[in-house]
Amino acid sequence: MAKRLGNAPTKSSDREKTNTARSTGVGCYAIYARCASSEGSSESIENQVFECTEYAKKKLWRIAEEFILVDIAVSGSSLVGRRMLRRLMAAAERRPRPFNRLLIADTPRLTRNMEDYLYILKHFRDHDIRIVDISQR
Image (cartoon, rainbow, N blue to C red; front, side, top):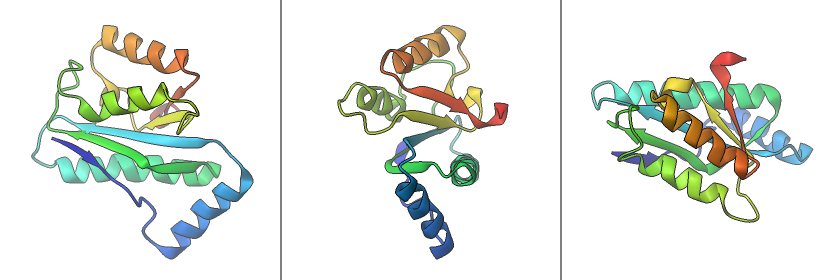
């Protein structure tokens, strides 16, 4: 199951911080989250998106809300069925780019397969988009 999560900032103070980020002219960021099972996926996905959003707020980075995308009940061992990841990859090819960084909570959320990881990394790098794993910061 694939899903788009928009309107990440829910409190008015969160919106103010996001608006502050917009006014600074800082680059635009997308968020990708994935959960392998449908059981407990809602909490896992919400946590991943929350962690990425909070990290971005601390850095005053602007999140492209239409590019908070998640794949639910999809294995990380393959790119098969990863509709939202594919959507982000296609968006990376557009000019002007809708985002210039992709935030993930943890590398295994992106993929668990080294060949796929290298393919994904190369694709985004070829389109001048950096993947930021917030667990490594």
